[in-house]
Amino acid sequence: MTSATTMMNAALPAEYRDRLMRLAREASFEAGARLFEEGRLADRFWIVRTGTVALDLHVPGRRPAVVESIGAGELVGWSWHFPPYVWHLGAEAMSPVRAWEFDAEAVRALCAQHAEFGRAIAVWVGRVVAQRLHASRIRLLDLYGPYGSGSPR
Image 1 (cartoon, rainbow, N blue to C red):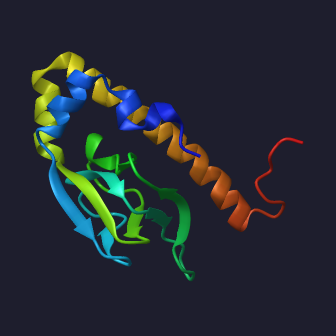
Image 2 (cartoon, helix red, strand yellow):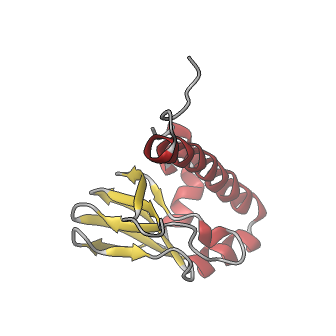
């Protein structure tokens, strides 16, 4: 349930996309590889080129609950943008994944140097966070709520 406004190509003007992409490096993950673990340092992020990444939440006594699947053009990871820079979820490649990887510190430094670029990145990441929180809430209610998602009737 990704909104077009959370996709990098729609969220950032071409000039800012180009500036961000100058910091990108290619990365790939085999199916089953963990990109990051909940509670660990959030020092990078990715934009998926091909494949699917599952975002999951640790649930004591159970398997991690998948709260959302991320595909081509989508941002994987937003915790790098907000102190204390610790992952709030985990992420696993559900298929072979090719992605652009970004060093979080380098991107934060560029945001600090160029205020308008930094604002554009912050608005983009904020939209992603809002969308992911909404999707996570619905998914967790579906998994663990007594009456499903509780969507209004």
